[in-house]
Length: 91
Image: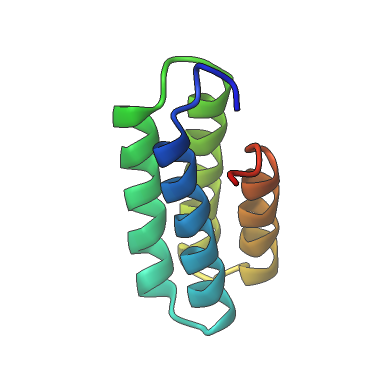
């Protein structure tokens, strides 16, 4: 794991990705928005400035926008999947 990515923070973000995916595929958009908001706050407060923080915040903004109005769930899930893949696997 890279020194600039705290393992505990990566673990939390990947867990939030899984929770967001479950909520999206289960039709629970309120929970998906809540977990996405939590993920954005974790990234802002716990990740160092740089690529990963920007990636999480961008993905969270896109997911939130995709759920506004007429939800585009499949695209939102694709953002969650891509975000999760952007982080190293925590053993």
